[in-house]
Each structure stands twice: as C-alpha cells, then as structure tokens.
Image (tube, rainbow, N blue to C red; front, side, top):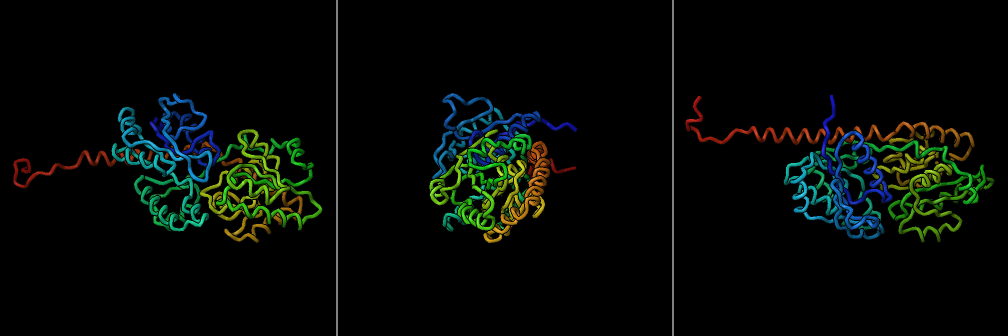
Length: 405
C-alpha cells in the first residue's frame, strides 16, 4: 500500500547548521521525509546566517532570544495567532514539536485550536540539566511542565529505552521509542588522517584519547582528567594525548586543568569525521543524555567507546565486544573500563572493528521510516476522532416526532 504524502510541520528551537544532537537529528529527519515525498515545513528561530527576507513557503523564521549559558542557542518566540493565520491558509496534516519552549507551546496551542494532530519528541533532559546546576526546585517545576506539555500530544517519541523508563516513572504517558541513526559513509575509519595526528603530536602507534561534544557542566567533563591520568600511570610506556573536539562555557576551565590536551574547537562535516577517525579511544562521561549521537558517530568511525550504561551506550554497546561500560555514576569503574581497553593491543583492535560493524548497520533510512509511521498513525487517530465527532447523534427531546420509528 502506498504511503500518503503528508504536509508535515517540524517545530524546533534549533536546526542545522547549528551544531548539536537535536539539530542533527531534525536535519536528517526532514531531509528523509522530503525524499519520501512529503511536504515539510520548518518553524524555527532566525539564525545569525539567515537573510532578513529568508522566509519561504516551507520555512517560518521567528524571533529568538538567547538561552542563558548556551551562546549560539536561543528560544523561539512567535504568537499563536500568527501560526493560526498561516496554518488556516496551508493546514498541516501533522506537527512534530521537538522543543517545549515558548515556540513549541505556541505551536501546540494553535494545533489544538485547529484540530491538527501533534507528535512531540523528548530530545533534551532539561530537568536533569537543572539538577546538575544545583537547581533542584527548577528541575521539579520543569518536570511538571514537561509532563503537562507531552500529555497534550498524540505520542511522545523518546530515543532510548532507559529514557522511556525514566519518563514512565515520572508519570509521562503515550511514550514510543524512536532511536537515532548514523551516516556510516561520512563517519568512517577510512577518513583517518595521519597529518592531523601529526599536528596533535602523535605518531602512528600513539593513542589519541578523544572526546567530542559540548563543553558544559552537565556533560560531566571533570572525569576526563583523572581518566587520562590513570591511563598514563597504568601505561607509562605508551604515548597518549587527550583530544577535545567541541566548544562551550567550560572550555577555558578545561584548558587550564589539562594544559597538555589538544582543544580543536567545534568541527562539522568531513572535518569532524576526520577528527573522529584519527582517534583511537573515545571517552563519553555524560550522565544527562537522552541519547548521545556522538556515541554512534564514534563507533561508526572505528573507535572503542567508554561510557556509562545508559542512553545510546546502553542500546548499542555490548560490553567487551563493541565497547566498554560502567554503571551510571561509578567513576572508578569508568576509569577501569578505559584502562582495560588498552591492556592488550588485540583487545583495542577487536573492539574497534566490532564497533564499526555494528554502527554501520544503524542507518538513517530505517529511522526516517519509523518516524513516518508515527506521524501517519497520529493523523489517522485524529481523523478517526473527527469522524466520530461528525457522526455523533443530535440531542433530541424525548417524545418529539423525530424519535418515532
């Protein structure tokens, strides 16, 4: 049976070319939906590289204001009435709301007013982030708001089984699992670049210990330094260097703490892929991820990943086979896992090969198709409710002529 072409609206505070997991995921999903014949509209804040008249039929740019502590990211702001006017002219079949800020809230209210189906995504664990910054009361308030928000959508898509379990415990409903994919053609061991390694001061047999991601407090980056020190003490005969790819508010502090590390800044596209492939061991100490796209990117690039047993790592790493895991929060076990990978050269080689083989099977086309099914199911459910409403019997007073058979 042919899949019907839909008018789909994606609503998000962040979108490519911004560099983060949410933007990357939405870029892949929107492009995949278009390739499958759907009309995709994007509602997002205006970015620095957008021209004043950049709005077109399939893009609605709205006003944005800076998100505290996250330079380059912003909340979106648009009135519900502006969305109502736009969608009355060109009514979407279904909305996908990726972020729950003011922009997402306005879109949710407008869609409910028009009877348009809405699917939401849980991409960022803001309550956990707030907890990392010591804002316990804010974390509880955010949880109440997010639960209220997502209960008003047909389904909430979560990227990992551990995230779904956590949200179920917090009273969220209608949760569905939708994983993430990786471009195994872009992220590929064949992109290894010895010239790049030379610039890091590493010879062919030296070990590049890599970390890629946003340099912020919620990423648990304080674990990088003791982990590297333990590796150097355990294997003094081997030359190791920490390579940090990414930017963020903690960069200056980390540079002071680890003067011997190489900080490469934010990278994208083929340059990012070369940085991955030129590494050997990947450290991912975060405890606040809903998924963690960088885990799959590192595995596809042929790296041995050390991570805590949750989100993408729990889903894709088989301990001792495709990587190494530690129980969440057990820093000593995390360090031991990293040390185990370097005990024997054959262990590291085998794990890297297995990681690449596993990640190369996690392509985006299957994820896009799964996403499409969720959107179609929401439209069908909304259509069924509308049909039932249209067919509802009229209230007729007993004894009137119309009640006689």
